[in-house]
Amino acid sequence: MPGTAKIGDMAEQYSPAVNYLSDLINRRERVRESWKQDAQDLVDAHQLALSALASMITRFAARKIDEPARDVEGQICLIAQFLIGVEICETSISEGLYSQAAALLKQELETVAGIEEYKNGRRKEGETPRIVNRGPTAGFGKVYGFLNEISHVSRHSMARHIVTAQMGELVGANIVPVYNKELSTSLYGQHINYILIVVRQADTMFQGVYGEGISREEIGYVSSAMLIMFKNGLIEVAADAPKEVTDFMKEVTGLSSKGAP
Image (tube, rainbow, N blue to C red):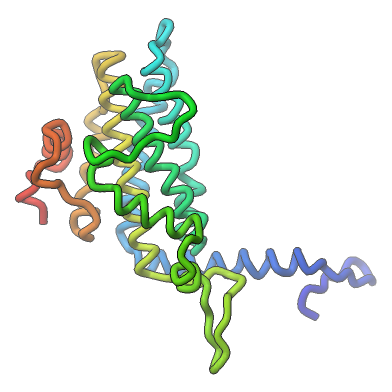
């Protein structure tokens, strides 16, 4: 019988919770397999971007900072918090937990904004970092709104789109993840992009503290990740992007915004 396990000569019926969680985990694994087939080299881009960030953070982790300034300490804490959350965010996207993924991506974007506020001496205690139309969050206002709509379930049409299932003439809400290639691609691309932004922020911070930042090996990771993102149409350099952004992009990719494939 489904949901039945034999222990010696006795049969023990699992609880409905165990049965449901087993079904949920199995479905999430199937969604991940579907996503891996569709994502192709985007999975590689994620690993490359994360390799750059993890390598840089661990390289500098053992170095001592004597009484770090508030802005430096704040940036370090937020970068560490961002790094810790990368795995659960990637898992949520890859396994079809789109509402949960949107909430995590929203936090990642707010973390990017918070790092920048510390860097510029504008961070205010107790306030949510602002997504402003300058610096690394320039142009992300609409994205932030989109993530809010998914994570806050503020639009029924969006929630319905994420969980609706159909069997013949029956239409209803599915209680296990429903794979959506377009949404997976959009959210996954944002996630990789935020990792790449934090790499640049960490590089700037370490340059200020130690006089050195990203290594040639780490630049190689970033360059490869960005080229994959360019190829998939998930990243571009705006014509009016700050010089520090365009300089960094040119260094790691060897391309200008006009030269992107």
